[in-house]
Length: 205
Image (cartoon, rainbow, N blue to C red; front, side):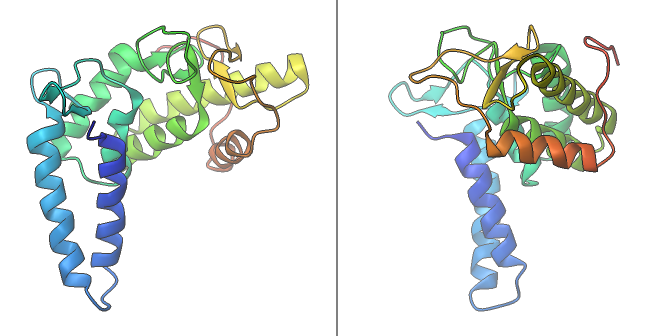
């Protein structure tokens, strides 16, 4: 596949280097703009309104959206119209009681529903804020903090992933769920430092 999140992150790096004013900065700025255009051409699903992965075997975009769709907002690769459509996707399909869904599929694997992951919450919250969707970003942050808080109160531990439908410890995947995970602690602490607080589950916006 040609993954949307990898290309969004590469765009972010190229943009940063392009803005550095040093060495090959102009070349990297050009590369960033070419990548942005290629992402829209090959990885943007205009009809459904989301960025996705391109399947090289089938020669088409994968039909099922995932939370990787928020990466172009995180790095600033999306247009405002693309960000607005992605925000609608978040509100209509990916916003769960405990945060942002990883995917809409239940495969039993750890990167599918009902699991939620801290890095994806951070990417979505940061990206949505960047494009003026602050209320939605805040709701994702508050629901995630609530999930981490509820699981901590019941287990006394911080966990790698969470079931964001039931706001409990996550399961599934090829290894046993891990505890004391750095990215959960880091993301949750940073969201709290930004002023977000736990809120009642299933709050509407």
